[in-house]
Amino acid sequence: MKLLMNLSTLGPQPTGLGVYAQHCAQAACRAFEAEVVAPPSYHGGGVVVAHSPADIVLGASRGAAWRRWRWSRRWDARHTRGAERLVYSPTHHGLGQGKGQVLTLHDLIALRFPRQHPAQYLYFRHVLPRQLRRCRGVVTVSQTSRNDIHEAYGVPLESIHVVPNGVDRTVFRPPPPGTAREPFLLAVGAAYPHKNLEQVLRAAPAWSSRYRLLIASCRGAYREQLEREVRAAGLQERVSFLGYLGIGELVRLYQTCRAFVYPSLWEGFGIPPLEAMACGAPVIASDIPAHREVLGSAATLVPLDDDDAWAAAFDALQQPPAPVAVEPGPARRFSWEHSAQRLVAALTALEPRLVVNGIPTP
Image (cartoon, rainbow, N blue to C red):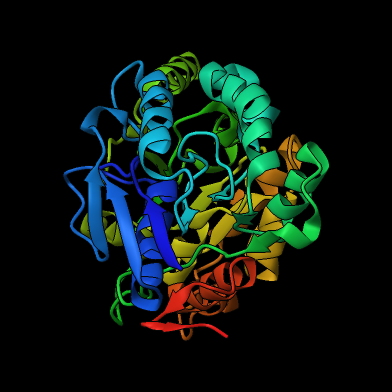
């Protein structure tokens, strides 16, 4: 049986979900006889059997979610029903009704914070449950999300397979010897309110006299909210907002920041602090289940809403940073090679008839 990969929503400037989808697609194409549905900008492996419209990718213009749903139902009706192929989506967007497919759910943030993305909340609340009842299985990125999916949707735990995120250690690596840590704090990926950058702004008396705060990949209404809070606190000279960063610039900031901050209210995994660790940056993150699972004792984990504890974490930065001798354990443990092995194991467990490297599995 062939694998049909649904990459129809993969955009040209991927964020965390898109990076994960790209790596999983590469792993699946190496392991299986794979066909691909993808937008015209896709140049990866597998045999592209159809191009999806460019206006349905993640991050496309307003109305993309509706166009995506309508297109996938039409494509499913014409091409996948009754076909001897396992459909695998490395995102939560299936093809059509999702019968017999494998979907990937990174987290249930849309359910936890419905106001920050109303359209996605409606999808997770009303459309996704029907698709999950018809799916072959689910892939997710952590035990935290696995438990969430089981509790929210009743999917049996044995049908939920963990394929974690990874970090490319050939790209995200410690700085050259002698590189100095500069007097700024770094936050990345603050596009929605659950990223909770207000926590860092409230602790400004503990850091603003010594450090600047750079907030990268921050956009939309949440950026406007944070900008208002920065002005109200008189921090305009101490806080800078950056747009989407290329990999080279992002790595440079990871390698030179005094500390990386990640105060999220909830995460399914959390790639940026792992990337920062791989680049040798000290990490200060919220003490939530996913961070305990992924980062563990390698990061400074601080309770949410404990302003005194956050202030103490920033005060501790006055001590000279320790030299980076080896990468912290999480950066070594979560590799894309490991993720690829877990993905192949998950898909072959869900469909033993998949053709692996041209040889059907027994």
